[in-house]
Image (cartoon, rainbow over all chains, first blue to last red; front, side, top):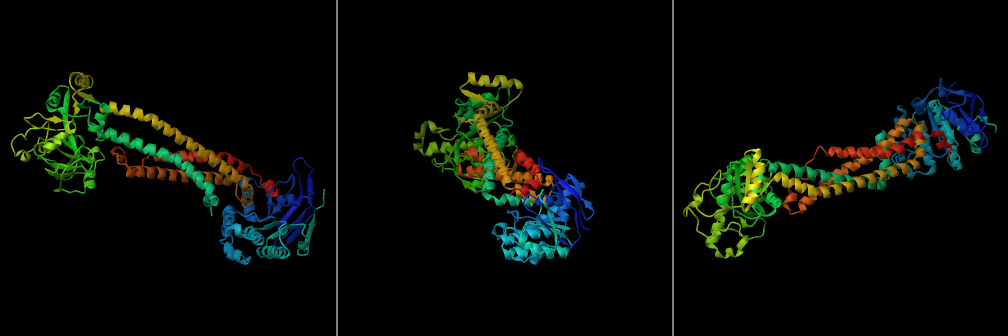
Length: 210
Length: 430
């Protein structure tokens, strides 16, 4: 298994701890993480990304225990092996589309596919040297997917990637995520409460409210 | 893509704020550059030009004026002194050497200075062509003078009366260029040197053939009413290369440059001259340090202004970095998820601050030199034209030092806040 979690527990300061169900995922597989607001979906995602350290339990990605890595080694591991797509694109506005992807490659110190060919795959090659400010929301979301893919990660995490998109774009984004993840053999975890997404992914994990 | 490019992109993403801060800092540093250049060059030139001159003896008046006119050739002379009295001083046992100077004419604003070959030795000049004057009306041009006049060996010109442009010409007798000096960076560069006899004869002829000019009365510096001495052919005789010229008439010179024989002279000679004769003696070292003391007030005032500007620029850069960082907390969190370490974020903030202030330093040094070049180009004051605006001093490295310090200090708090940024908290905030 590429990704495996065991008895994860995390407590936000001043709140009661949340326990998360164990699951495992092979390369190329996709998992949908569902749950009501406040059920800890985002916290779970942050634990999977190594952005938060669990109070108990562990996340195993490609044989590496995330919580065992510290400081810059964790940052670097995340940059090289985990691609994150956020609810909003959050691209660096001071850079162009292509520079945003180059920045991701520079920070992870990893030679991935050329940013241009990736943009071509996602159908936004014509925007390569456009400033971020000129992109539409759908285009910006596709650029952020390209940024998550540019280091050929082993795990792709997507946090509500479709919530601000219309039906057509939402469909396109999900298809893109699935095909690209399958293409590079990465595990894909999508956190959502979007009904449109549910039909697209077979494996579902539902978080119970505390 | 690297951190430097990224920091530069962030800076150029806010061109107005970046430009304003860089220019603010540049103004402060420009003032420091100008002060540095002017102070350094003046002091250096003043010291070099006065080297070997212990005392200047001339007509009574302002001692500072005497020094400025006789050593640096930038003010009007205080008047003339009798040759006989001048010769008496040169015979004193306290005096090692006396160089007589005779002034009163100019050519296109360049002073024609009558002296002897000792003056050339004083400044250790080298000839670019020709040799020193040997007969009356032969002149040696300083390097800059030759360029300004556009003259070469063998050319002739006539001088005009007075030491600045605008007076009537002495066209009775033309000067011939027989020597041109190499540039030395000293006061001789801007002089036209000749023998004392030449200066005398120029004014003799005026007196002889153009009686009206005596109407100028006291202003006439070297007026002589009698006919030329030593017969009509005196212009063809060699002039005195050392010491005073030989004459049988009642002549005058403008000043004497004196070198002491022993330290004792520094105490006795000035007092002797100032109280025992109708002349005055002034020491270049003393008068110049008095002048710098007077200028010192103005210089420290400007320095204060420059420091205030640099501090304000530092504050403004700090505020700009801090504000832009608040807007960019999300960016920083994204960078961390992409694999950037805390150290790299801190580096990014410092790079931004330092590139901004380095830009300010470059601009400031550019402004400083440019401003000085403008002043030198627009001015007619010879004092100012002594300054070369395109000399770069090693001290200007200090300006980069200041800029670097401002950049680092202004970045400290923003960098700390970048270091503290928690990614998960930042990203879950909506």
